Length: 419
Ligand SMILES: *[C@@H]1O[C@H](CO)[C@@H](O)[C@H](O)[C@H]1NC(C)=O
Image 1 (cartoon, protein in one colour):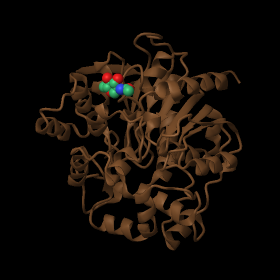
Image 2: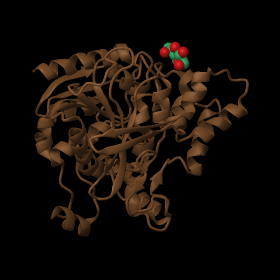
Image 3: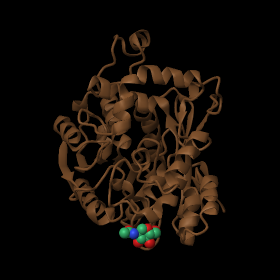
């Protein structure tokens, strides 16, 4: 499947390929011939984003953005709907969807047409752009640095500070150039919320570009965090991160690593609800999690990240603050002009904010989200999802999430446009 699009002087080649863990999922299916999965489950687990979106009859474009520091990012775009609003239109409102840690643009698509936020927004008349942060499966390229080198790990020396401070400005500027739209909505899940806060606190001029910030479980404060793995590892980040780089292991849960396959296999062998697995894949206990969909989730996630993204969250947990990455005194002096990293100034995040959170979320605890909401200067609404079992990944993967959350979000987006 090959389609060539000419857009504002740039060529976007859309080539359907394999999902990050397609080979693994093949093996999983082969070893469990008795498990009955529909052909859609089989296919959706193995197709990458362009393949998946084309399969369901939606238009899909892939765009390349090169950041000032040389990372080559892939933005996916669904420019219009299939059933409603199914024509290109330069006046469409633009929305950018930003994924969480170890995730990708696929997270907003795997639930399929009718349920996944990417398609729902296209049907509602939006021009949908799906971001991929540096280092993930779709943005694992650089003009000079080699992500596969075990000896030179410089490709992997970034945290979500760079994602918010470099990748997002480059992507937003690009989107404005292609669409001509001066304003857009920003939807982020978890780290997608973190990176929005980073973007606007460090580059406040971006605030005015947003009709709204729709933050689903935005991660910034961790005082009440109940995620057992993070809490256990956080005190040791200053040892773990340099050790990982020294061993050539700056990439975490990428699609090529043995450990990823090991974790996936361990999780798939009917132990999906064992404690370790559930904290990696399901992150808790949720009755919104559709177990029939497991192969599809496993085909697309995890999509890879840098060890430093984890280390940066670990520093936030340890210091009980939302501040820039701590490079150590000497580098801090050079980069920040001070010995310790500065906090992100949330008073500068003035875009209209809509925050969604859940009481059963162990990764971004509801009390921590309330603290964030109390510190942001322009919160229009903080919405507690009405279910005692709704968990961190249910915001993107939960069954019924459309009725429970997306319908409301879209109504609030329209309100924000007319404000
Ligand atoms: C779970 O996923 C399957 C396969 O996509 C779907 O047929 C079923 O309706 C889903 N169940 C719920 C409760 O959403």
